[in-house]
Image (cartoon, rainbow, N blue to C red; front, side, top):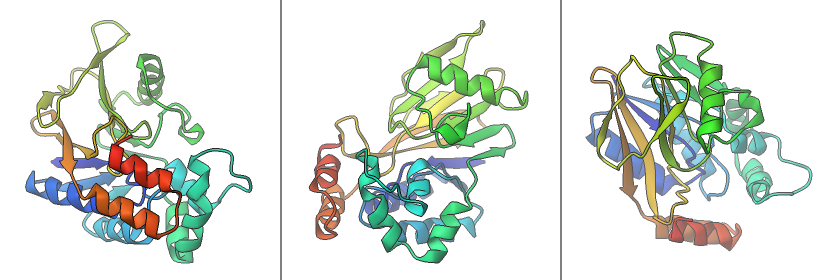
Length: 250
């Protein structure tokens, strides 16, 4: 199976469409969306509908923290992430909000555990941003000895760790478009980056493709109409900061 892993779309329809097109060109057979379909961007309804349609083809979808906030907006805006929750809530239909609210927080596909943040208490939305956090997530997932892979999003960066001969996790720096062998005799944890909110200074969408038959994982970067996505944010009356971020990739 060739499984396309996508996360943190953040209501960026242009980036989502570009990644879907790219993944199909890579012969992706199934899609997994690891949360944060909405938040920040200007097209939450269109993104939700696009992903819902893909579930009819077998796609799986998880809940992210921004999805949860869109369903239940915070009473007080305290963070940048909070700032678009009410706008998103108001733009989504009641049916779309219910659909988001019912999404699971984790999902096991054979030997693959999918989660938005960390498998260690996923409801706390912990960031897997270093070896220590990656170890906690992989250890939690390893409670099921069948799990070989843990994939998440949330940190908006593409990273890969594997458990070496000892207990410690070893980091591996993936290169876009280069297949990485991920044999089943090791345990692996990857953060697949963000489709709609790249933050490494490059306005290129991110996703990953797992080939389970070959035991290979390929991280991809995809050009998309980030200027168009930024224009849509400004036209929607959302904070200009979010448009500027898309144009700078930060």
